[in-house]
Length: 220
Image (cartoon, rainbow, N blue to C red):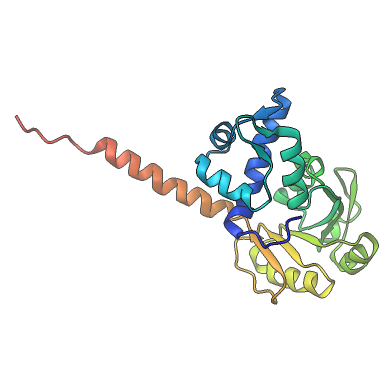
């Protein structure tokens, strides 16, 4: 990994560049220019070059980037060249979908346990894993070295789940519950609020509809 700390905005774009490179590789592309990669990633080429400069110099003037090599360098930088054990807490509809999501395993994330407080769900098999009691969290973390926890519980339970995760040694949390979590310094939380994203889309859709329905002034 690079010795200097990469800006958070750049870190957020690295997975986007990696996804674009993966698509290029699947299509048989072996080299690409910064413009081609920027277009595929939906950013301008100047921003892309600045972002990649934080990783080192991997492009060749007049040739561009070696797709396979740049994929590896970005994967290494964001930690995808190793296996990351993950635990999912809350196996309702969303948790069930996350457990079955193949995109985790294909990107280096291995779901090692599914936990739920509902006793009626214990023993149920989802995606090849038995749902276990939430009380097993400490043992799961110890057995598998879990550093990443996914919260897919109702909002009312999310903070207590996060607190317990931190107590058990988990330092990175992906929160799908529609609530803000309070965690100690040194614990990273990423929040995925599906309802908020839909509300933002609704705002833009309303504005588009309003523009279309606004009568054109007759200047004749």
